[in-house]
Image 1 (cartoon, rainbow, N blue to C red):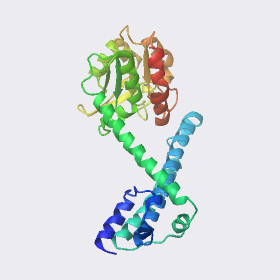
Image 2 (cartoon, helix red, strand yellow):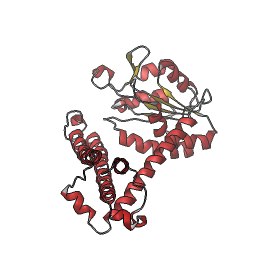
Image 3 (cartoon, rainbow, N blue to C red):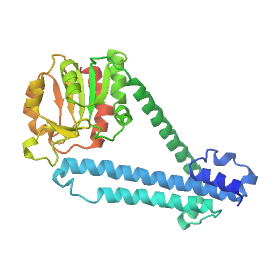
Length: 313
């Protein structure tokens, strides 16, 4: 296989199979490139299925353990190995064909070849492949838009998302998660009325004094000892230190009269639900008297909180 054909095949395995099977010429269908084109689409289909299965294991596994067996969540060993195994299967399958293409070889794996021969499998693989690429593109565009919306917010703002980035999580992860809430806040209060920023004593004080809505993307006490039960913690990179805040610390800061709703994401923050409710009164608070997990925070951010913001605040 010529160097030019190897480059084309390599691009196929990178996802550039953008021409539909029905539009391929007869000449192309008789060439070695067509075999690689079919393999690339089938491997893309298998890899996407692996990703969906891993995502399903992650969501269902975490929610099940958090709600029905929270004490075993940290010691349970099957979720992460299962996800790694499923993702590695798709990755290794892809790497085998990529390396083969670079050496001008057409690697024939039994079940991949069989899938290529199944009826409309190629058309189905193409549809799923293109749909997945479009989803990635949409996610990128939403991430860029959410970041752009978070630039130069009005201060003080009416809504705050204060997050613990643990010193390494990029801001776009949080702006993407908060995207639908940003849109709801913009519709309700106008542009720039949501501040998304790392949590610190200063940002927390500003939010408590002025906000109508606060989302605290923070952690619970974890392994730091029962004396911190019900508190939330965050890492401050400037001081290289972990800070803990409970109802007493929030009470000493003071809560403004405009506050209507607080979402406390910390694990076991709800173990002091009565104390939190008294501190934030009359604002409503959502907390968790158990381990809280990312899938349910995503559900609240994208489904429930925009409606709460629109109709209840």
